[in-house]
Image 1 (tube, rainbow over the protein chains, first blue to last red):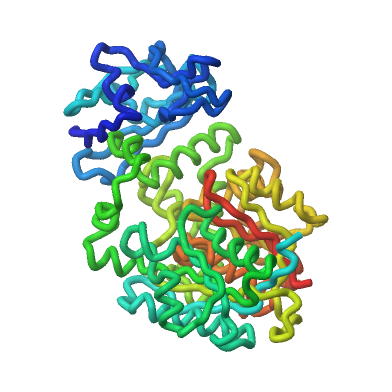
Image 2 (image 1 turned 90 degrees about the vertical axis):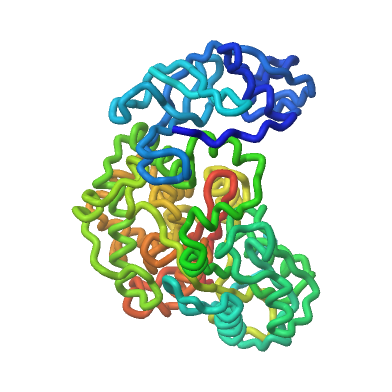
Length: 130
Length: 375
């Protein structure tokens, strides 16, 4: 399926391009280490302004998921799985994503998953697989 | 508390339906003039306007009239107005009116909410066509590459809730079944044909475990209220609805906690709940946030649907909610609460007439709740 590419803006470009070398990077506070997603210019934890993108393991656990059966996007053919994946590095660090390379009916809450990337235009879109 | 210095003096509602193809300004006028007359006032008395989401910055059908449209149409002379979408829920516009009245900026504020989504979708060729004209927003990049939509969020919430609580679809489906049973007695509701739990369980999946009947329905319609100073000599105080407390904090739990911190009343005093049900799971989350049901116990609470029926311990969404009544965006819930508190619920009036009701609107950090009484 062909995903719509996200617009690359100064605030988020580093996230969307991160997967070019196969590594997921998350905006991280350089003062307290808090990881924040989506990227923002201030740490909500300690209010430091020094935020930069740091690699994470790419490992996570499915927090919730749904099998979408409705044509929400003109270019994406249902059914497909949308999920919230909680990264192992930090509780509450949750990415909305797709689960790929897995039968839709086999997805479960608590399932360990790892990141892979779908390259669309200038973006490497993080998706997850068992 | 400032909210106790304001009351709902009048309520009004237009025709509500699918594909009415009626001018949304005309629908707004129907509701507004009815509310003003119900308050015992005339348009000359209205000196404030409040609405959600205002005339600009929304998709076709979501907003049927803005502040200036209504001021010009009704020839109002206002001292204060507000219209916008970044509010604590759709009923944040009513909270704005309460604040204006309580602070002395205005005496009688007309609040209104007009939707014409059903006709807009009909004219433009469906929901996706109306969404395509949405201005590009920062947040869109986080769901468009994944093919997510509004239903995704309802589905993810429902799946997680079922996982944590052990609730089943057969239990949660009672929200939709109950709404339909109440809608059958509401002349303005859009879906009145009987719906059984078997129908619910057999229905088409939109985004598992969210099925067709878990989703509210876009309609055309307008609802209006007049928010007046509680000490106004012009209104009939005996018919006015009192604001016992308001909650405007970001997040359902914080919102409810704020509301309860502003009153002596307790969740056990609530005899009617008119809760936001854009997806049925939202009503579940509101029930628990408001302390009406213990956390993760709503599945059991909903068993067989008896407790939330009109004759149960906590009647819920007595006009059919947004699931069967139509998406009037929180204003419909508030309208139904006023009818019930005043004893004007006709064949769906609950008995004894409730003294205290709670109303909620919105979800996530975009939420508000109102505790109402007829004292």
